[in-house]
Length: 195
Image (tube, rainbow, N blue to C red; front, side, top):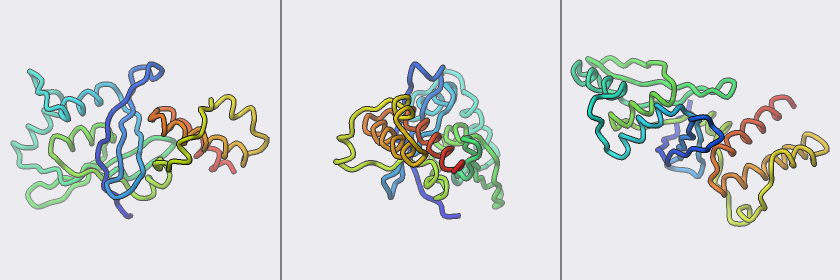
C-alpha cells in the first residue's frame, strides 16, 4: 500500500447539500485533488482549528486532544485507506508507551483530530487513482459548461457517456465546483464498474 501525503486545500459548501460540505485534499507531490463530503459539525471543527479560533468550551475533537495529552497519546498520522460504495474510511495511527495502534475512524473525524495534533495526512494511491480529480491543463479549461442531464441525453453508448461525463467533470473542476465534481466522479466510477 503506497501512501501519498495530502493537505487540506479548503472547505466548500453549496445550497444543494443540506448542510454537508466538500473537504478538498490535495496531493503534496502531485496534481490531484480529493473531494470528500463531510457533515457540518466536522467541517466546523476543522475550520475552527485551521483558523486558530478557540471556542469557549472544548468541542469533541478538542476534548479528545486534551485526554490524549493527559495520557501521553500521540497521533502519528492519518491514513484514508478504503473506499466502499462511495464511502471513505480512515485510520488514526496513534502511539502510546511505544506501542502503535491503528484506530478506525471516519475521515472527517480523523482529519479534525489530525489538525489538532499537526499530524500528517495520507491517502492510499489506490484511492487517489479511483476518486482523485486531476488538475486540468489550459486547453481543457476552455471546455464549455455542460449540465449532467444534457450529457446523459446526448450519449448514444456507454463510451460516449463516459466521455461526456469526463468533460463535465473537467469543467466542474475548472469552476472549482468540487461537490459537482465528486458526484460526476462517482457516476463515472459506477459506469466503469458496470462495464
